[in-house]
Amino acid sequence: MRSLRTGLPLLLVGALLAMAPAAHAADTPLRDLAAAKGKVIGTAVTGSKLTGTYGDIAGAQFNSLTPGNAMKWGSVEPTRGTYNWAEADQIVDFAEAHGQQVRGHTLVWHSQNPSWLTNGTWTQPQLSQLLNDHIALEVGRYKGRLAAWDVVNEPFNEDGTYRQTLWYNGLGTGYIAQALTAARAADPAARLYINDYNVEGVNAKSTALYNLVKSLKEQGVPIDGVGLQAHLIVGQVPSTLQQNIQRFADLGVDVAITELDIRMALPSDTAKLTQQAADYKAVMNACVAVARCAGVTVWGFTDSDSWIPSTFPGQGAATPYDENYAPKPAYHAIAEALGGTTTPPPTGACTAAYSVTSQWNTGFTGQVTISCSGAALSSWKAVWTYGAGQQVTQAWNANCTQSGAAVSCSNASYNGTVPAGGSVTFGFNASWSGSNPVPTVTLG
Image (cartoon, rainbow, N blue to C red; front, side):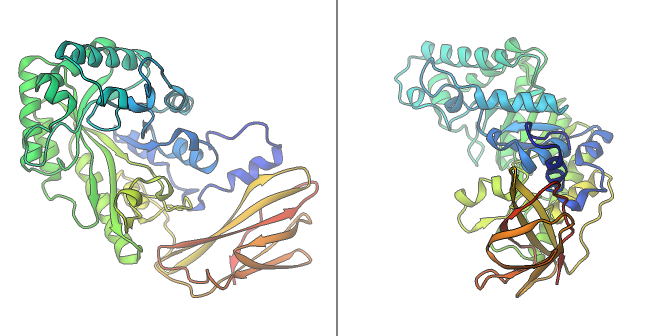
């Protein structure tokens, strides 16, 4: 683990370490596997969550971070001339403390702009100046600290025509070259990308992007790479993905998979998770196969921090970790594509993980998560033995009893079912004195 909250009793450090998913305790971290192949494996993150287990996984498993929202114009300048860099700074600081690079996202986009900008009435010179000033300020703030920027985001419609936006309507197609040129001036070392979705395979939209990049290169406009977002659906990875990556690479630019997630209709089950793992592996394999594919960033590594359920109702489970930070088959598929060997839970297994979530002088709060892979439960019982006299005083989402050092917790009336690929969590308060070693939980 690379990051622990400060100000905690020393004995709690062990408890916090135990919160990390045990499934990859003996596995090589994804970031090390990717580095050995000269690739980036990144994740989008929410700055406020970069503590505890979320922060530990983000720091240990990935060698690149992308701010999910913190660097968008509406976030950094909600009121004209008033700036909020707090979350963006937090993410950059975290990345530097964990030996990670940062991908800036995003400078020029039609969405998530501040209302003062979108509702304003601007002349062409005014709009041009706003564009230049914003890029100079934001890129300049992080000069020398970011590896790459998604300079222009989503410039095309599905048919390959230019999207009608504030920038296109006000400045014409030249806004793209203008933005790239301004970004290069603000940080000559950062890699500059154009980023879009539904451009993963060879189609009208990706061909329009291809033609744009080719034209920009011919004009001498600074363009270093193309970002393929890859918000995909289970079972629908484009068959021409590697071919498409290669044709962009042949233009002399890098290619990055920038926002990978692979969603499914809920609830998840073993068949869907198996297909999802195959899809993640296919995307990773396509990148590994092309020398100029810089790497892959997942758009959030845990289902608890995914945009999918709120945007696509009834769909989700799109990331490599479930909502309780347990690695899914997709995690192991990524590792295998990067040349690693993993130890996923055996088919048909259900496991229980114990963690301490908070602790004070005389007591603590703990939780147990029961996760199933390739099997299902209609009822459950978790048992463990305390080694230092701890006593459970209260429990929720389970019926718990304690006899001496032995604790037994069974499901409540409403949460006995754990589907294949699913999990359930219960919590409790307990007292302790002297030490609080973490017990091993088994399912009875």
